[in-house]
Image (tube, rainbow, N blue to C red; front, side):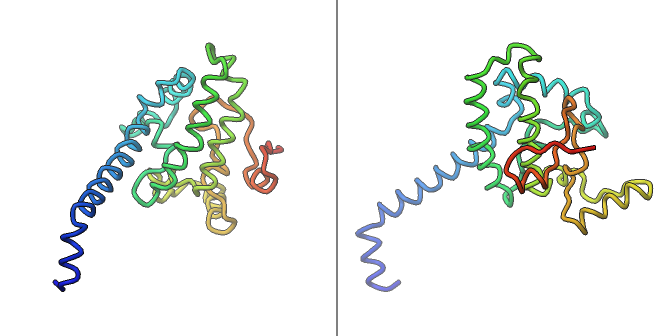
Length: 194
């Protein structure tokens, strides 16, 4: 070690050590907080989320092949490569939904259903922006049976389509499907025309 570096470390070593320790604590808090905020139990701490949680348990996605997905499996991108998406989802969507939880009355399903189309649209737009990364975590290489289904899946490669473009209303109560490309272009919810 050079003399200048040794002298610098003697003079500032405790500050560097304290800074390194603070960085480790901050990283642990961020990653631990992200994990804690991604649990189904945390999601269900908001009364309004009990309705979609019950719908999930009745859907074909729950119990299929022994898989019992939770909220995060579809709504929060997982893994280090997607950590920025998970944090952004909690900060933006979580803050918005927390505000709406306290400013709306969701005491029964009919009241919840008044906001359902907007919430479904927001979730669909996230999946569109993420290229359905949460779908692809389980459905790694879908090989649908039948020529029509295979042709539809070819659109994912040729027309920049993603899972959510065609697969809406799979888990929760059905609402009008969203034209995701038109919604992105217009910056508002555009309902699919039959």
